[in-house]
Length: 294
Length: 204
Image (spheres, rainbow over the protein chains, first blue to last red):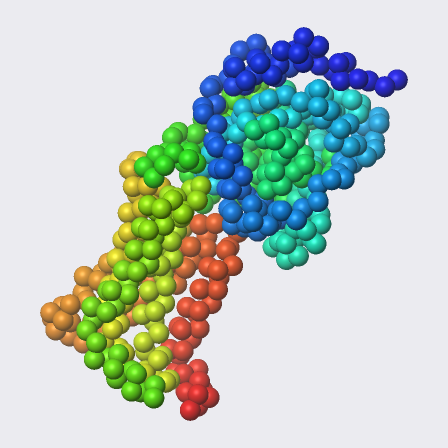
């Protein structure tokens, strides 16, 4: 039996979604989400800002390196291997994962672990729907994401600066959360290379580095994945990496953030718990000590 | 040939250092007002001021090796170069307080004592401030040359702390920061008598 997209997303929502989400800024993400808007994400940053201030270390460590060096990345053809503890493992095309009629608008805040922030209008599909289609087996507890490894097109991968390929992970309930998005577009355009073309993860309540770019592999597993940053510096980067103003990075405060695009004297604003998405996601962490599981 | 040029340079007034020293600032102001700083001007201003301060610190460390190894005597310019370095360090600190932290005094004061990279930076800045405050001939006479020189040897500490401050403020140590750090290590190594003797033999 082949499942169609309408099996995982109620039809009226598909039809209304663009208008609804554009109006609310967020929310209406799916049946599981409470029918209320989250904190207003604010005015989106410009396309210029979003595409010229990136951390995509495969293309260099500077904020403008990705914009300068990502042009050579080949994103067509592209396939994502979805495997592990699922019923229908295989190589999925972008059209399989994010067919045009399933793509939604989501305006999300982005909070970088470096204490700056942006507001970004993404297009994409909820990861939950994709996972539902491939049939997650009951034994699966975590999802591991892997970024493309292609040193000939990704200059920093020719150096041993990080343990490539880039790996990230989510707990299954985090991955299934309606806010969790596989983004394929930005401002109504295909995702620019420097932003993680052609498909990337977006988890808006976690620090930006959790949202792995240019995905080639999604693996369902029963073991907690070790993310790239966690492997490199476990005291500074935990598995969860939830935005939390009360838990500082060991080397700098996370209490406030500098909104990019606010101008020379824009100053800082207070960082919100779960990046402002506490109403939607706090229940995922009930009973956990988030200072220990940072 | 070189000596003639050095002699001519030495006859120039100290103001030439300030004139040259003002150029990175002028360029930064120009880039700011013409919108060339890109998406995040705050970060660029802050970091460029900091790097420029360190470049002048490195410059001030070059006078002694130049004299000892190459007999290039421009030592009279060392104090103004150091003062330019201090000026950029003060502007860098100001940019952090006003532009980056937005005058959030509670957070920034707590951070200064808590965050290693800020502790390192503040110690380096304090040293530069002490050196700037004791840079006049009047203070030199008052302290006497021996004690004055002892105070001003703190520049080695300031240079090392400043470059560490740069490196540990990033998620990954930046390559250029490590290069400048290597240059500082080299300049410090040239102070070690054994190394100095050997290098002098090598160049003569």
